[in-house]
Each structure stands twice: as structure tokens, then as C-alpha cells.
Length: 390
Image (tube, rainbow, N blue to C red; front, side, top):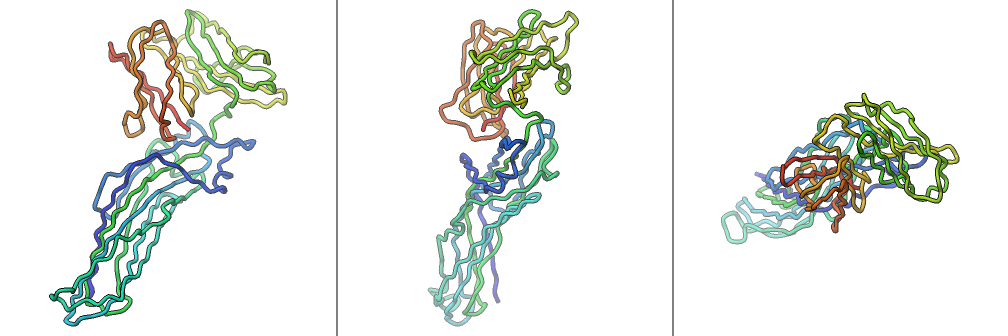
């Protein structure tokens, strides 16, 4: 009587993700006016396990930061199998075996599978209990093209502040194509790879690509605004926009573009009753009446001891800069922390009446969402701000 026993050992190894996306998905992920959507990448590491089915969760996309355009999932799974067979019949028999395995990854609107088949034999196995009644096959590379991708549109299952579930499974076994059913088999498979989810979204407002390094800092009763304009020959003017809730903005000043300078400064004077949080952004208008915006900078007017912190550029590519709304003096530690809580970059700095810390890395972190943590090494006071790396 045939008996099939399948044992699967799964080992998922973490490495820097190189995401492969079909051209069709890129087209679906464009924002208005052909501007590419902004990506946020999450990669999950699964520790070694012997189970054949496992579940894992990704963070949902928070709709407060923009409009989700599409979702892409990628796996880079490879696998090696060893297969053993034993004749359980009373006669010496020539067997022809078929090994059939498949991996499947599924989530809302996404299904990726990797099938594998391999034929072994004819091989003659001695009668049960005699020398030569067993045989081992392998190693067999069960997945030779490991890049698997899947995508879906702005699926509602991915929206919110919770998690979205995915499942990984491997199944199958070995059967005989010829030689009868009196045998036992066992399959041992080691799998390695990564699982990565990418959100492509359009920001709440379209960011101006040539308006960079925008900062807002308190200085006595003023807010000092600074920004850089790159390749701004087509710009007509800038509006300074102010808000008390970070949602509704009003224009408080307008500055004509000056093609002879790349750096702009503006002092906004607070009234005596100003309190709580205030928000600033720069609206850029071109000579063709097209608009774009800077990131929003947030200032806490009430906090006299803890400084506010801003980050730019965000998303970052080659590095970033941290700006505080007070001058700082002392020793500080800067950590870049991934969503799993791992510190992937650290920098020690000594500040003397400075409000800026440049952060540059030799080895670029994988694209995704991170947290930048600044610690005063004397007082242990910490400040954390979210950063996105492209």
C-alpha cells in the first residue's frame, strides 16, 4: 500500500530587496500629470521553521498620508529538495517516480505560485528488508526562477492602521508513474528567500520636486523659514502657507521667484497669543500656473524644554538632515531604526549651538519606512521622527 510522508523545512533568509515590477504596474501607479507614485516598502524575515504553512502580517497603508494607488508583492524564494523511497513489496521492482511540489503565497487580491516536477527512474529496488530496497534522489533545485511578483489595485484590505495577512504554503509529494504502489517516500525541502510588500501612493498634495530642504525654526517670537529652489527658471512665485491643524492652510505671504538665487528665507512673526502647534508649507506656482508643495513643517509653541524636529528630504535617497527648532549643545546619538525595531545605522555627534545634524550613509538602507531616533546621551531624552527611504 502506498504511503507518502512529506516533511518540509523552511528557512527564509533576509537580504536587501531588489524589487522587480512589470511595466503595466508602473503605469497603474502614476499620480496626476504622469508623476510617479511614492513607494513604501516592507520586507519580512521569517525565522527557521519546520512547518509547511505559515502566516505573516504586513502593516496596512495609513490613508492619512495620501491616496493608495496600487500594491505590489514580491518573493525571492529558492528551494532544494531531497527525496527518499523504499520498496515495501515482497518483490524486486523497477520504479518510475514523479516528484511534484509547489509553493503558494496568497494575500488580498494577490496569488503567487511556483510549481516544480521532476522524474526519477527507472530504478530497481530490492524486495523489502533486503539490501538495496531504498534509494535517495537529490539535491533538486525545485525553484529555478525565484523572482515572483503579484499586484493589485487600491484594494481596501490594505487600508487602515492595522495589519493585512499573507500565507505561505508548500505542498506535494512523490508518486509512481510505473512500478506499483508498494513503496514509502519522504521529501525534505529547504526553502530560502524574502517576502516584500510595496505600497505606491500619491501624497495628499503633489510635492514640488525642485523645492528642497525646507525648514521651519523658532527664533524668539519668529518662525524662520528656509528652502532651496533647484532649476527654478520656470517658477513664478512662492506662497507661505500657515495652519493651526495641519489640514486647512491659508496664505500669509507671497515671494516672487528670483532666478539669481537658489536659497530663500522668510521670517513669520507670531502674535502674542499664539500657542499649541502651528504648521507651515511652501506653495510653488510656475509661470504656467502649475502648483506644487513642500513637505509640512510642524512647530510646538508651548514646549519650552523639548525641541521640535524635522527631517528633509523625506523621502530620502542618499542621506538626510535633521533640523531642530532650538539650538542644541551636548552629545547626541542618532539611530535609524527599521519597522522590526532593529538599529541599522548609528551616528554620534557633538553639538555646540547648532540645530542641524546631517546623516549620510555609506551603505544605503533598503527602501522602506524607518524611524530616526535622536538621544541626548546625558539626559537620555529621546525624539523620534518617521523617515521614508527610496
